[in-house]
Image (tube, rainbow, N blue to C red; front, side, top):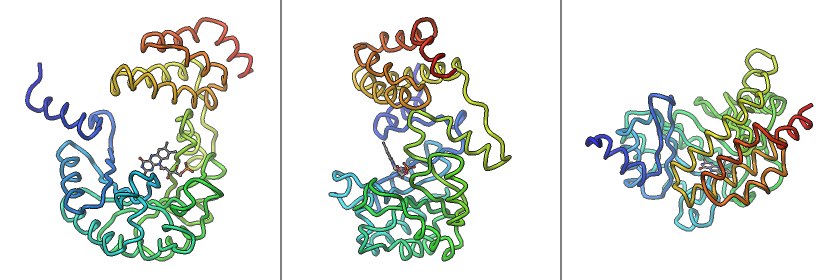
Length: 291
Ligand SMILES: Cc1cc2nc3c(=O)[nH]c(=O)nc-3n(C[C@H](O)[C@H](O)[C@H](O)COP(=O)(O)O)c2cc1C
């Protein structure tokens, strides 16, 4: 039975695509994006009321539909608006507010040093920098010099981001930039275990145990089921295909499985296909590859 809290939760979940479970996942950081300071403040307050632990503001997204509305990385072109947004959001909630951004709009306009100063003055508690401009999108190599300069310039923690895909690259970026932490993006797609591997190396210098086949398949099946339940039968089917394609290339090392999985046309047949991996030739194939 729905009580008023559950109804609020369900409606907020569908309206804001929020799916946090403060009992299971903490701390929970909720990212907000937009260009209107008051609307962003309202979004931040709503997330706070729903149980968020941290509010993160997105000024890094390069997508056209976001930048057209002067949101995401497009905000880097308007430093006055950046200051207004950060001040308004920080003053609207009692939670820590962090900022995720890029090094600038394009290589002629790298202004991360000024954005970082504005962020610190506004009371932003940590700053994540993707070492590319918006114009660079995901092309070329992330550059860490701008991140290193910001680390020397501000007192707040800086989190380095861009092209970190192994314990070795995490170590080298931390040492080169002096950043307090690293953020991993694309390398997690189809391989969420990379976080544990990197942590192990950084914290105790040891290699994390690789996931057993059983753990791997259980995680993948739970992930696919969660996608079905959150996005529904139609969108969930397509989003699960995308994730299985990443898992197949990365943690599973079974690229052929993605083609097979894409022929499944219902949520149940997708789950069954993963179940069959436990039993049949796919698992033998996996064992050959893993051997
Ligand atoms: C599919 C995809 C979705 C992303 N979504 C977000 C997002 O919602 N918010 C955000 O701040 N960054 C987002 N990013 C950017 C990443 O957080 C990260 O800054 C970028 O991928 C560079 O890091 P990497 O080289 O480790 O991937 C996304 C990246 C990808 C590839």
